[in-house]
Length: 548
Image (cartoon, rainbow, N blue to C red; front, side, top):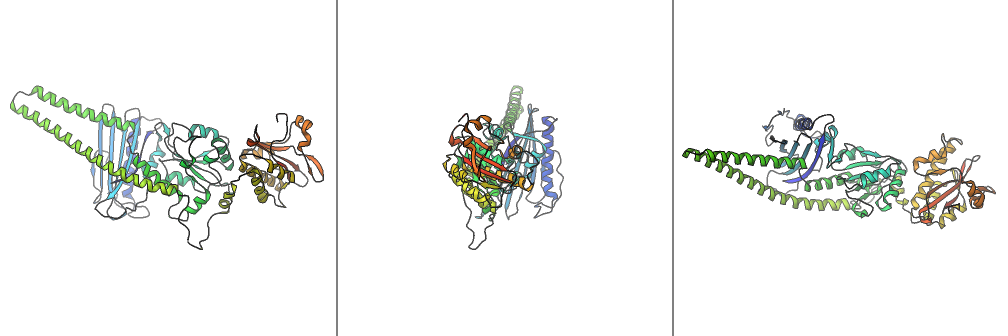
């Protein structure tokens, strides 16, 4: 049989013992299995249409032909181990599914492992057509318990990356050496301020295999760029997966980025990005199948206890053996031990062979998923097919700039309409052409932020409802209403630009970065309160001040 999914994690039930968590997880497992039989057979519910009641005790049940549900309980001095094995047919002819759920507790901790396999009931050279997916029990456990993997929390849903807290997210989560699950970061489109994928659906689909985090707004994407660098960032509607171990020195190609066009184009195919990623993660989880540390420890303790009990029984029989019939009893114990050891040897040999086959199958499947995962494009559309790329997604391709001048010219084209709230002076164009600033896309998006704010100001007939500083604060840009008196006194001419026939002081400004021209730029502007225009006079290097 082929392994198609595996996960293992610890569970905690708030204000309850580990044994209570163990029992509750067992109840939920029974409910999950029996719930499948409660549902009507076939799509859309894909149930079996044969209501059953699973008793809370070890044993075996065969609710339908070809179906088997078995529970096995084991315990030792340090804890309990409970295994559910559920085998049933699939949606395709001769398709066969096997799901094993192992629960454990040692009085202090509780843990669960879920392993799903699929195969065929008879030899047939026909590919299995199943879709990779996560068992519903995983989501149920994540919702009902506080779950963790090697101490790392496993969220039950997506979570936001708030504006102003990106540095904490990067340090505590993204770059943490303790993180054991990938993080999928979803950014928002710069125009609609909405993600191009559904975070709720993604978190539901990837539950237990990846965390899903959503950047609060487009400005949060720029903050992420500042923290991790442009090549490792994610913004403008893109989606990126960050594997455990990512750092500033990481190869960006290893942490797949889906641009807006990739996402939109994949929607035209039967395999959108979400399904491709799910298939890849399921394949990886299947090859990484291991019991949790607690379950492995309990298995060893149970085996050791069984061996010790067997050895003690043989030792007692030998000591008490007097008559010939006593030796017959001793021989029977040795024979029983030998049979058990041979059975264990055969089982281990079978498991080893099956594991080798499964590993080879999984290796080939991972290579197949890797090709899909790394593909930058999808199958070409038939000739004449209209593009479904939204305007924001198309525009996003133009947000990669090679210079401040290019970013400035693009911003003027997009936001410099004759009847708009912005007016650009020739001095601004010249300063942009001279700027060596290394993140020109930030210039573009600052001008967009100024345009959006100025439009609100004009629409409000000169009122914003708040200060300009507060209005621009969520964008990540710090607006200043004045320059210092010293700068005005000593270098005032540098801040004056000809507007409306006379030189005016352009002291309202936004500065990004510091120290070197490569890492700093400033936009200086003048607010014409009568015409309700925001006039851009400078867009380039930081103007002279006392620290220049």
